[in-house]
Length: 350
Image (cartoon, rainbow, N blue to C red; front, side, top):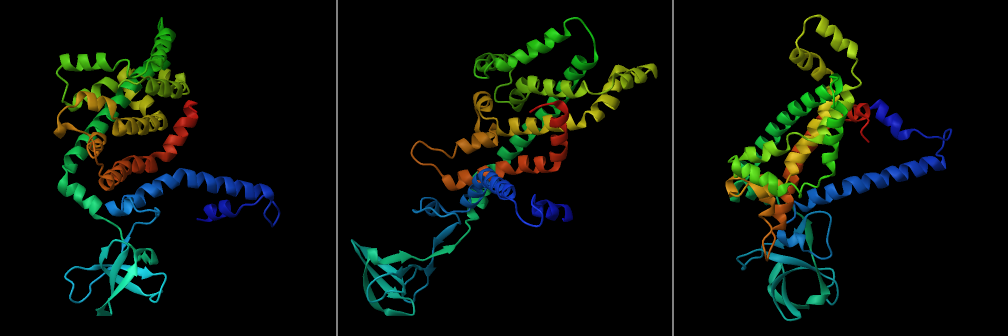
């Protein structure tokens, strides 16, 4: 806390704020608003009711119209604040509305009916968080199955990606063989190929292997990534060769050198690739949509798409489910942020 307080109160001027301090803080505040503003809006909007989402003018906080229980009326009545006329300043409950006139009653004296023009009143709003958007997801939709499908695919694909990419990076960084640089350049060249170009060939291969409508059909085609190999190779090049030679002189096998020496020393770069892999797999939409046809095999992004119909979209559920899908990636990044920063800096990835 002490370091944070000193950082927040640090100034360039001696004892007073310099103009550069004002510019720096303004820049940081604007950056924070731009980065966190959409996330805050998403979180608050996910707590709004369907009517609150289409309310105009829009509000940041989740609100709903206040209602009051009035004697002789079976259901709670919506409340309005009268802005003009003889009853200006009063809060009345609406009994009915016909055309441009509304019949209102005072909740404290419901015996007298009051006719008020609809333009002379304003809704009484109150804070209301619609937690039903989240609980209904669990009750109406097979959310647990979609969550398990995403967790399984993301976890298994990340483990295999780390294993295969680290092996390739180890070979390309610590072994000297003919054509090593050509293989590396050829692998980097595959970054130029758009994923949509290889979509059909990948699907045909998955169909021949019987991987359609199967989670492994989503996992296997993308476990070897040029980005991952490049990132890990650049980091492994910084590991001293003398350390590996010393292990070989101690009769350590190549697998033991890879598993016991190279992998532990490459932990920061592995953390970077892990967070990238989690984000790729967790948010992947196109390839799972192509290879997964049955609803029970869908991942969370595909389930999100099911909330969008041809005529209507259930925005309250869509926003709530979007928040849920963001949580795992945010938690992983929070725990691995130090390794991610260190790994990106060490690997030279900008």
